[in-house]
Amino acid sequence: MKQGIKIATIGGGSSYTPELIEGFIKRHNELPVTEIWLADIEEGKAKLEIVGNLAKRMVEKAGVAIEIHLTLDRKEALKDADFVTTQMRVGMLDARMKDEAIPLKYGVIGQETNGPGGLFKGMRTIPVILEICKEMECLCPDAWLINFTNPAGMVTEAVLRYSNIKKVVGLCNGPIGTTKGLAKMLEVDSERVYVEYAGLNHMVFGLHAYVDGEEVTKEVMSMLGGREKDGITPKNIAALSWEPDFIERLGVVPSGYHRYYYQTDKMLRQLLDDAKHEGTRAEVVRKLESELFELYKDESLAVKPKQLEGRGGAYYSEAAVQLIHSIHTDKRDIQTVNVRNNGALSSIPDESAVEINCVITKHGPVPLTVGDLPIQVRGLVQQIKSFERIACEAAITGNYQTALLAMTINPLVPSDTVAKQILDEMLEAHKQFLPQFFQRESITKA
Image 1 (tube, rainbow, N blue to C red):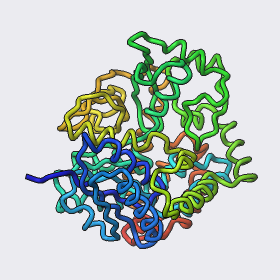
Image 2: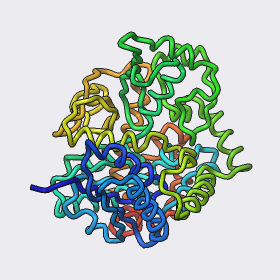
Image 3: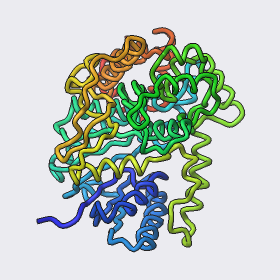
């Protein structure tokens, strides 16, 4: 019988990797990971070596029996893995910069997982994820695929619809960050807070919030109104204050990403101002990453540096390792993850991916049934799910008209004319990473 757990991390050169390593170190007594394979591509080799060496120092300092392996051979990492984690960025930060900058030229929000940027990140990423799925079928057919790669909901949707991998879970640090933020706001320990989450990735709502079993949703909504820096918004999103009357009547806890849809004009102005004075978020992240990797190079550093929190990845390792631990031990605790709906949300097709509270078992997450979403948020969630499904189809087929349809029905894009202008420029800008759109069999522009 196999001894120990093998983890394969695709995109191992990510600046987030120390978060993951820290999580496995902290849980090592309960989660017997013996091998962690960090895999990356040739362009990420330098970062992989820097992060990998830090990971080795962290493991050595902690005194845990985990072997860290670095490789540019993805198949070597995947062979006989028990869990495969994906945290990659196809096209790297240069692609993200284009995702953010090009839409702004047309007066449209440029953001890496929402609007045109989210569409293009998805279309670049999905074909690569599906290649990994095919390799997993041969090399580690019993492994769980834990996807952190954004847009996590769209990627999970694509795996469920277009691959043979059934053991897939999409993961985001958003819900756990929101719960901890609400706990601080309520001045209670986070373990006392339970939030019923339901929706889609970056489009999830807290339908009910409880402290020690007593509902505090109305109190929370009242506290959120007019509040700057609410404590539940990720660092990569401007925490503009909510209109008090609106947020109280909305009646469900929004995520930071909802500002792009409910405060579109203010968020657009903020992004344009940021781009003018500080650069897009990708440019800010590039500077942060440069500083982080300089820290990582320090051979005396053997712990995750506090500066990593500036990347917006707070609680990333906590969410990731907690999920893997609960699957491995059949813990049956409740976590918020992206899984096949299976009737839990009646507002969304059964076969689609949703982000929802689940009981985590050895045979996978079991969604907790919610029924219909509240009427005030149902339509927006359904519209984004329609966008995700058509975006997945565009990513698979390379069909120009399907991509234009996806772009146009996204609520952040004002018209088909603007959608076509953005689509054409972004297709050309990302041509290297979108070969499916430039093959003869693809339907060409009308």
